[in-house]
Length: 441
RNA sequence: CGGGAAGUAGCUCAGCCUGGUAGAGCACUACGUUCGGGACGUAGGGGCCGGAGGUUCAAAUCCUCUCUUCCCGACCA
Image 1 (cartoon, rainbow, N blue to C red):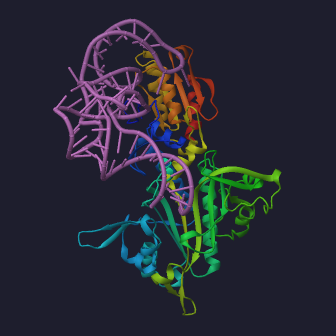
Image 2 (image 1 turned 180 degrees about the horizontal axis):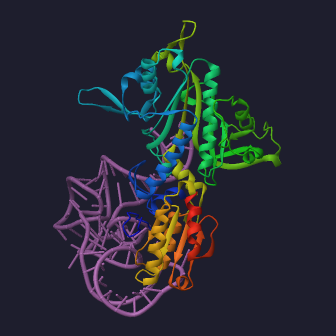
Image 3 (image 1 turned 180 degrees about the vertical axis):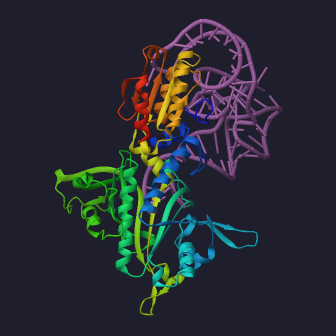
């Protein structure tokens, strides 16, 4: 993408309404614009990041055997009455009346909708287990939206729902998601800590939150240092095998947020205890028959008996992750995107637009990058060098190639790695190999 | 939902106390000088001062109501 053509409105100054760093940088780097309290428009660069995160989530869900569906944003009040949550959910649920005076709502979650589908369509134990997910916009009318996209009212969430015949099987479904979540966050360059959690209003008796560490996180986190040293499950993970012991290697380590943490009773020695701050980016629950019972999700078992399905639900805040990653990865100059989620992997800076040699070199590099399938943003604007450097750092492009008259004369370009702030020179004729390396990322 | 703050140009803000023809910097347009880490000069464009009432000869400024946004706390992917 040529920067001159791109809609990427970066700001030198910080809009006054943004107080936390990720929100400020998202506005400054031209990722989003606010439309109303807790409601955002995603601009091209921000939307690219959002889609990349979404795609990683999708791939790991698919790998773990979940199947993607797409449920509506607008739901009927009817199923929510069956589960009893229409009245319980309170003002966080945005209620809507249609032209026929039917009560509708903008879905804050989808247990009711999916359970209703499963209740209607699945009648035999032979069709189990099932795990269905969707990545869809949710709306929760938060009293106080804040922190930009981290606590918006409208947010993109991956939510899925597992349906099993018995506890044993449901536990396996839960474990699969536990592993899939660890992998998902690791692929985004995040260190995620699973933490035993309160089940809250969703109910149930088995639940973990996934917290990523960031200095600016909203809650204090205490955990066993060993947890931070565990390698995330690799590509070899076999989701059909028993995962209990793998899950336990993670869940057996101490981890607690400040409201659960009691220094008096903490089982970890002080020198082994990590105190940090974190942001919740996922939450998984097992809750048995809480929804399947009232919504009639029942199948006939092998012995001919009717069995009420065992359910779990699993959520990842996709739009929240955009902010969370920035909280975890930035510096004074701007965002430092992990390569896997960067809007563009490579930034190409033409220091002297209009100079025949610079232009020619850049056009060649730009074409080569594109031909290799490397996502590149080419700053071909006729503006001063400082502005281009500042923009690339602000937007957080992981690899930056600088082409200027001085270097071109020597047949060299400068390579900068954003995350390390290290620069080196590379010969123009060695760029082919460098590009091939980027293409392999 | 309790407590607090703020709405003036795209952004950051001054002006308001003490009423009298709406300002600065950045951004934008044109021209010129510049040009390897957010240059400079000259000339421009851009505002129903959040909205509605009221007071007054006169309201960005004073009063009332209202809308919006932000912050702190309780609650949450």
